[in-house]
Length: 185
Image 1 (cartoon, rainbow, N blue to C red):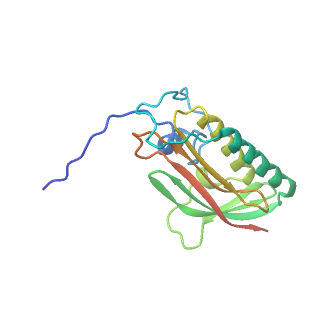
Image 2: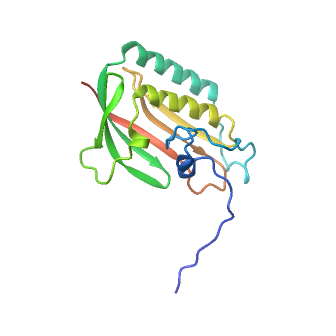
Image 3: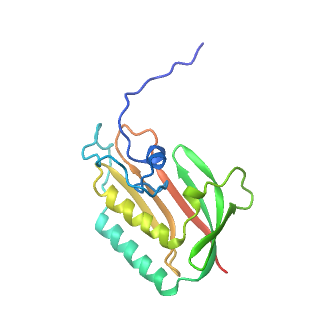
């Protein structure tokens, strides 16, 4: 028996792998350039059942508070591991070294295989905060946004950031990164 492929209608996705490929900061998957299209204001299929819209004021306040904590004690040199997904792609874990306020090295994290993608992983914590702020701003305009974030209680740096769409037709398009093994050098 030959497997049957179901062909779904195409629709614009402004998140996930497509957004990363186009260079949008609107997703945790990465990118730095703005999209050349206006944000989508209506969901083509509607939000999925049980969807709850994020409280963007609370998320922005949380980000601002964490960023202020980070700024008060920002170390000059540090290392961290980042694991990143731009659905459906899982990138290999990357160790990022920052010295003097700039990324000086990226390498595969211990036990990882593959190739480092510096366009997605080579960011200082300040750049990650900028990316998060841009994503919050963009996602606030989306029809069914999903955003999750968490921060280190001691330093304030982000430990997890995820974004995507919660519409009922989504099959991929979710982006997330997590930070672990933060070490002051």
